[in-house]
Picture 1 (tube, rainbow, N blue to C red):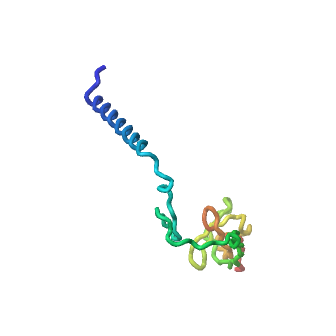
Picture 2 (cartoon, one colour):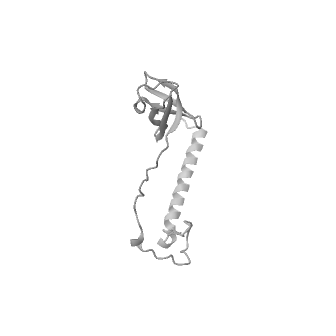
Picture 3 (cartoon, one colour):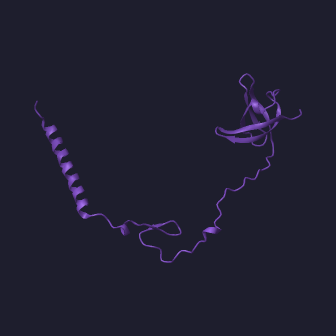
Length: 144
């Protein structure tokens, strides 16, 4: 089987690339490794990297004065919002409430609503964020 000129040229290019790569590798190895001092990077108080140490000494910090803790969650009092049940599917057990304030619609599940809820009811509810978005919870029907 004869080798065409295209194949010969490709083989020559591959061989040439291999030689160049080996040559670069040999140069790096003969150059020697950089010293440890050349590899150090310094960070100043603004978070900027530099190759020289900072000019002024940093302030000494007393480690015993550092407080590591999780802040306490303060329960916010949530004002219930008012709205109207815009859509409700009793067979599937979900619906949407249209807010009286901003006209946004919020999803609700039957588990967080009274059993006798229906479309057009005026309701009071609270909003809760979950993985899928903001939902209406703790729903109660307002007297008609």
